[in-house]
Amino acid sequence: MTQFIDVAAVRRLVDRVGVAGFIKGMAAAMQDDFCRWDVFDKCPRVASHSELGVIELMPAADATRYAFKYVNGHPANTTKRLSTVMAFGALADVETGYPTLIAELTLTTAFRTAAASAMAAKALARPDSRTMGMIGCGSQSEFQAIAFHTMLGIETIRAYDIDAEAMQKLKRNLQYFGSLKIELVASAADAALGADIVTTCTADKTRATILTTDMVSPGTHVNGVGGDCPGKTELHVDLLRQSKIFVEYEPQTRIEGDIQQLPGDHKVYDLWRVLSGLEVGRDNDRQITIFDSVGFALEDFTALRYLGELASQFNEGETIELIPELNDPKNLFELVLDSSGIAHSRKAA
Image (tube, rainbow, N blue to C red; front, side, top):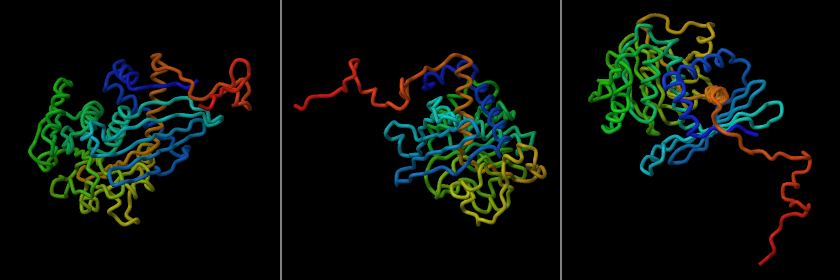
């Protein structure tokens, strides 16, 4: 039988450990997996693009487990009362190919992305960072804010979005979250200038310039979340040129990240090597660092195994017969036989 974790089960798991605890637990599991980087079978995600959006498949595997995520990105979905991003995924046993878990990943991906952002920032941002500018207040914003408050000690979020209602939504949702202060500002420049960390998480599928060099102070860490497919960027190329850039998986980020604006020989750095202690992150307190995050399948591998482990710990989810249980593995046809051994049939009208 296959373990099934739906949205309701994920909500109950979050209730068990808390939003901040869920992010911290996932980030810890993710760092463990990044430090096992060499044992994973990895490839860029497979994408099917249309004028309205993209549908992607994201696989990763180690010696014992195979994982994949199905995910879309359709910016206009909100006009249809649908999420911009929706996802589900599965884990399977490498030895047999048997699917051991299938789970929702829409809500879980928001936690996963925030966990990855905070994990990277802990390794790259200045330790004394207390203020974060956030440009884009959509579905990812609350998760990012909580992750940085919980894991890095960010005290103030200066938030901006072209949609004033989205800004109010962010402030309303986080009004009772600990000591975190949400300041709504009038422009992207107001959010970014002087901030210790700047997070860009916009959704439009365009080659945009959300953040320019004059908006970023020396020593800032930039968490670039929104640029995640060909032709979709947020950071000005001059900002990229003057910064030290870190990526999840370079072959994928070259295609999808903000560095698609740079020549292929421009030096970028692997985040996993910093997390593993093989390389340093920032070189000094005045250096601008960028995490050019596009979302990588290894992070979804982590998210799925973390969900499965929590669900087992708290006896959540259910088991479903996703794969037939056969008396004779060579006799699939038995499933269409009735109790007397006769194939089910329907007479022609």
